[in-house]
Length: 219
Image (spheres, rainbow, N blue to C red):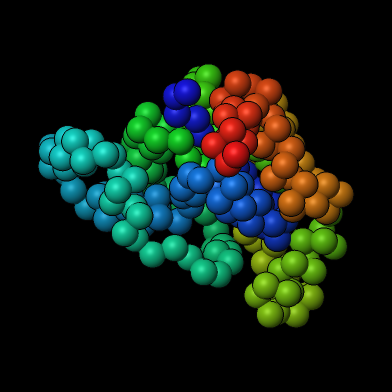
């Protein structure tokens, strides 16, 4: 079976990142989020010619994934309290990294307009996670240790940033458009673990992963 990619978009505080991480662990594949931005930031200081040389070397050694595994993961919520400011050069590098990942390995990619970038690929499943505001507020208060007022403000600012980011880099599409995704899940109603199970089942329905083979290996 070839490579497959699961992309995640999510409202802040919905547990989307946790669902993505748990899904990656259950499938035995890597989950990429902030490390794509870290590597793109490092590469964006290079001119196009030097980047292509680096890209050639990176591809010969297994793709960008081998580089990103050495970069630190974020251990906390990443919120956005500033207004969105475009950076086309940086996004261009992120796009190249995401496309390279999709070609070279099965993985999960969180955010970064990955669903839009990879929308023409048949081996990609795109997921959107949302939940009622009260649920997101409670999760944000618990995980960030902030007041209810701060949680509300953080969710509002971060989701606005994500919406503006998505609209800009997709040419006006909107981030919460259900047509962009294979599946939209309410994490409060469905539950984090059950979301993982549903997505795994959908991968099998799409023929991207064979859980029968996985079970046979365990016998």
